[in-house]
Image 1 (cartoon, one colour):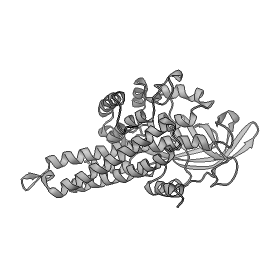
Image 2: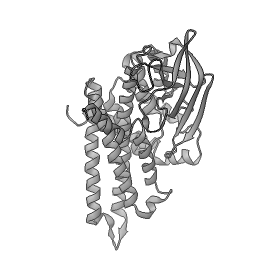
Image 3: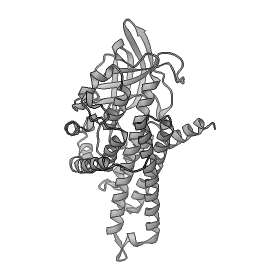
Image 4: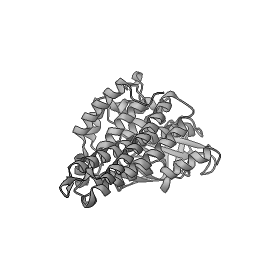
Length: 375
């Protein structure tokens, strides 16, 4: 598979680049933060995404979507990252759609996602650093289940219409099998939701389930067989987060290179200093290698390859490292102004930090690859 975009994908890139840059630039994020907006993103913007068809990017045409793939979803996510646009696109239009695909829940939730009326949140993690443990219990209760336990760092969990919850129906907390996914409404009884603002001004929620009851229709897929849809969700989410990280790193790099070209010391632009040129060139090469890794993961996902899982971990680790380098270099090469809130480069650093942690950081995925290779 060639590691470049097709003509149609490039056309989509041009369209989404202009749209996001105009509708949700970094100033949009700053305004939401300064207003202490309780939602954390613009629902009007989410509706605009729907009007352009983007919320249904991974949903088949027979269900009202565009029927495109992860490469195209990544094109959109890269521009979201480049502009630091707060959006539920990653959790809803990418990860949740993949979890719901080919299940009875798809017919219920896809129309709202396509229309931009539904926001989904992913209740997966129960502790810091994306530990691979599912301890929240789902026990039989009448014709359904009773959920007891907690979930942490649930992005958009305080406003989501749909909570996709990974629960333990058999086995121990570290077992791969014995997991069931549930579609839980946010207003379910005995569900306590506590929103917390993260470093990048986005909002995640801590969820406490104190015997939340759901009926059997809430099961996504099959009982005790939730690992398959959960893995689909995580592969899609990690690849999407990698694409957004590319955008964050690219946006920071563009801002930094622009600054190097206009900032003067001793009567000359600082971009003429060889030491800074070397650092900028190093950053560019690291970002391009990461870009190739992301595109490979997206293509393998779209092809349904059994090598996709490995490629996804490579992409997530490489984009986390490359973008961290990009934002760190950006702040340093901006000098003192890079440390001030009034200059935007700091926003890129904060967003990169949150995305790098999402669904496993570079160390998590390096370890995952090592274990898969037999080390």
